[in-house]
Length: 222
Image (cartoon, rainbow, N blue to C red):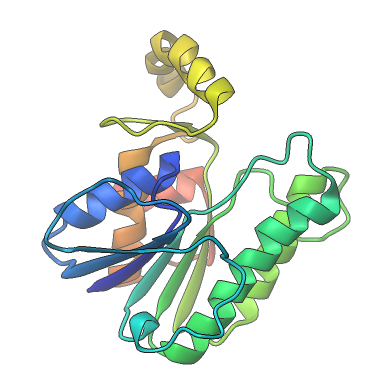
């Protein structure tokens, strides 16, 4: 399996990249992002470009992929809706529309979030924009498209957020996570579990097109 990975330098993307490189069924991984990952591996090839919403010049470099794991995203904190939509919806669809033309047999998996609003009428701005993005992706002519909606994500194996406030939050909450996993087993996922679940869904599919945390966990623990 050949995998295209967006957002490999983010916390979730770091975990997904690790699992892709460890999986013997993955022959090649190509990352796309504004910065290099710093990872060196025989399977890995990286494309670094500053503009992530223009892909008119791509061609053979984006063909021949079996799966795309789209982990790129930003926090909505302090952002106006138009700016958040430009990044969350605009960049995602620019990439996905191009990929759907070049890879008819591709499985596309998008990392959304718990609480995403598919109706477009909710009060939370980020949830509406994520929902609009999900709906647009599900209409594209991929072999299959799946929306992952994790809740609390626990970084493991060295993965960490690029946002300083989040790194502080994860450091402070680390002692509580074992208790939280017992109390809310279907709400907490590790970056390793998300990566492994993406690979499993890319290989074998899933019964649902929108997977909440409990559904993601069920892929690994049926």
